[in-house]
Image (cartoon, rainbow, N blue to C red):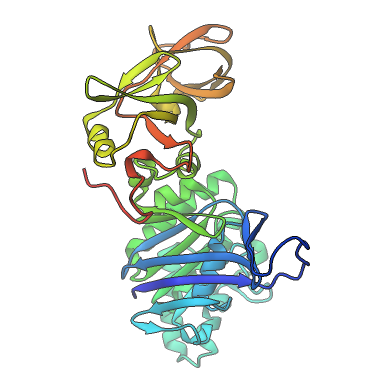
Length: 399
């Protein structure tokens, strides 16, 4: 295991397209949501992260956000433009990948088709001239941990996708690396296999002593696997925290929409102060905020203002009062139904438990209620959560 520190990491790729004549030299512009300077396209910007010894960190975000580029810089497959990468107390910017004591599992498995499973797993040890008895012991131990002992004599073409991914993981862990990097390792698997492999990775983490850095665009993987998750967008870190922290206390509107499925609902509302208390008002439906929210808004000296109000689909219920909307579609999901309706000309989703029989709401007008401890208030100016508007992305909430 090892502590990994990324300090002010930046990655800039050369940009060859000619800038517009009206742009001044060195003036930043936007293209494909990434900043462009006179030095090139900034793919990763001001990335700071301290990964503890043995921690499981997940980098998550949409395609093109810079998460895989960051992982490849840790691996040594991409040069670091600016900043320092420190592994186990040593700056490794200029150290070759093979000398960093890390291992990487790729999305495409990258197995040698002409070799058996045993040979694939043993290869990295063999080229280091490791004694045969040590190789055999390490390969068979990894195969036992991953439950692939019966496939050691087979070649990759005869294995399923999940089995191949186990082999790829086995090939990495036989080296007993200080840091294990995983770049979207489950994205090529179907939904059932992804669920199984998530469980396998959780079990694996308990069996081997290493630090994990895992990249995915799948928020479910991030929420279930990570000790902490790092949410990225356009090369910048949006928030770092435990899965529960980023779900319960998103620091901005992007994080609130990216984490959670179905996505959070958003409404145009007003933040008011009535009788010394903060109240949220959506089209005349008023709810007093919880004490914890009152305290945070008061500490931040938040004034009454127009706001974007975020409420998760499972935090709204059908009641006698509230926001009114007609149900257009009802998706039956087994234990619950997802009701799609239009509120304020926006598609709104509400999750309704199915208890004792299904109530068909399609075509009916219903009212949606919510409580003051489950709303999120985002600034119209910068999309930041007003409760944490003065905090940085690394802070976590202590209740």
